[in-house]
Structures are given as C-alpha cells and as structure tokens.
Image (tube, rainbow over all chains, first blue to last red; front, top):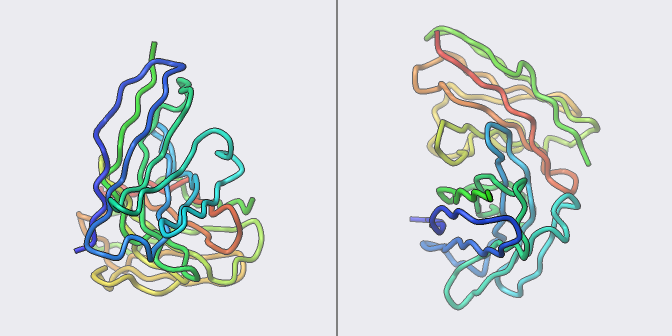
Length: 120
Length: 107
C-alpha cells in the first residue's frame, strides 16, 4: 500500500527555521516525483514544487522559488520542505503528494498534511 | 501561469440530483486536467485525470468532460458522502495550477 506519512504539527515564531518531512512507503521512492502543496487557512490549493528523489532534481513554482527549499534523502525515502526564516504568512497546511508519472503529472497519493502555525 | 476559474464557488443540491461543476482555463490545456475532492480536515483525493479518466476506486457517478479551455465535473446522482470541496488542476503548463474550489453542500 502506497503511503506518505508527514511529520506532526509545528508552532513557530517569525524568523525561526523549520523543516517538515514526508516519508514514502509501499512503492519505489526514487521512481516518482514528490511534490508539496500549500493550503492557507480557509483557502484553496497551491502547487509549490516537486523533487525527483533519485537525484534531487527540483522544480519550483515561481511563487515559491527562494521562499522554501525542497530536498530529499533517498536512503530513508523521505522528502522535506524547509524554511530558513518563517513569516506569519507561512501559516498553512502543507501536503506532500506523489506525482503519478513524468507525463501524467497529477498527484495520486497524498500525505495527511502538516499544519504549520507561525505566530509571535 | 495558466489561471483556472471554477464555477460556481459554492452550491447546494439534494441527494439524487445531477450536479455539474465547471472549470475554465485561461488558455488551452489539451485535456491535461484533473479533479480532486477534499473533505474537511482531510487531504485531497484524486477523482479524475486527463479530463475524463476515472481514477481507480472512484464511483462511476463521477464523470468528466471538456476540451480546449472548458471542462466539467458531473456527479450523476448526488450522495450524502459527496459533500466536499472540489478542485480542478491543470497539468499542461508550468507551474501547475488549481482552481479556487467549489464547495458542494447537501441540502
């Protein structure tokens, strides 16, 4: 069974750093792109970027380029999303998801989400 | 970026009704369109892709159609468990973009 299990909720202060994780199982982690999607409170879904865990090739949405870093550790089948300096506007639910293939670039399996709250 | 506009933003319908949600792209996307269902507090779930291909395990009352810039999601006979927010997503251009969502309520 394909599963993506994300790390738990985080409460941080503005300016702090953060790295959240997404562990894949039940499939070959290095054979599928893994992406991140943001959902701000009460709002819709925003595609942030994707990573190929095999070689860490990464693609970002221009809206998120330079604001976050996506990485992966293929040895432990885990992808990461990190911030070096959080802002209140980073408060959101973050989902990781598996991309079906290189040609059908939809997300077919999703993690349960990680809620990030940034507040002073 | 390709802008995706859904209509309506919300709707209320009764069990057994036929429901249609529309998604319009700002440019042609060659049927590179997916639909997701999201229930409160849950991750989105893939329903259809390639505009009309039903994901495995999704009930056949869900269907999709369209071409060019205009696409629809249809629920042929609404069930109580279909209460959710529905999102379209284009995967033709980069970055991938979602519609703003359509909240479906059961009367």
